[in-house]
Length: 204
Ligand SMILES: Cc1cc2nc3c(=O)[nH]c(=O)nc-3n(C[C@H](O)[C@H](O)[C@H](O)COP(=O)(O)O)c2cc1C
Image (cartoon, rainbow, N blue to C red; front, side, top):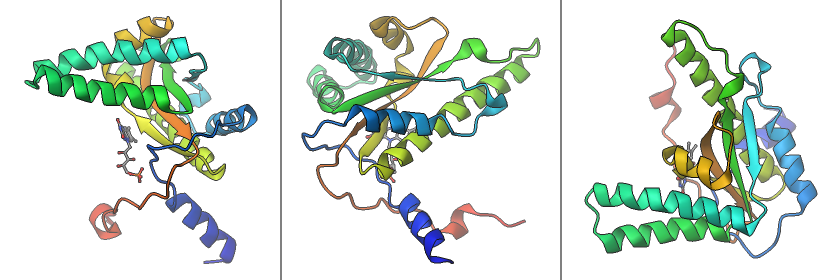
């Protein structure tokens, strides 16, 4: 491998999910650059179904965390967790959302998806929309890494669609896909191991 290719591959492999941040704010121009790079992700029909909601107001962040928290609490209690255990888990998740220097909610605007009479075809279009948003999310994580930022994808909004929509007064057609928390990393993160290539790559 040539030197620059090796450097790029090493860079791509060095991204980590970062969950603890130091106190520094993320400059707005850097954040916008990161989101703009995310919009260069490949996407089905170039429909650009992604919507990014930067949660800049404390009020918005609080409404989201509290809305999702109530739904999460109900789910945990229904699963059989004690009230105290459920409350502790909900508070951990709430604090993570409130304490991150930046939070971006990733949504899919379903109103721009192609719909067909055949439900299987419509389902395929919907999945392609989700895949496109996920690619933008992945690209956003890498763009953040390129800026020396750390970030983590948090899945909770996916499981609390109505609370998220209500908390942020989102259009009915927008579906939350994930929340990305960002900031400058508080510490170096060790890599989580990956399966060997021989387990995941088939050559037929
Ligand atoms: C779709 C998706 C959902 C995730 N949800 C969460 C989550 O809710 N909370 C969390 O701490 N990390 C979450 N992660 C991060 C993964 O745990 C992480 O990517 C994985 O453990 C590999 O670690 P690495 O990203 O540091 O390589 C999620 C990642 C993806 C792609």
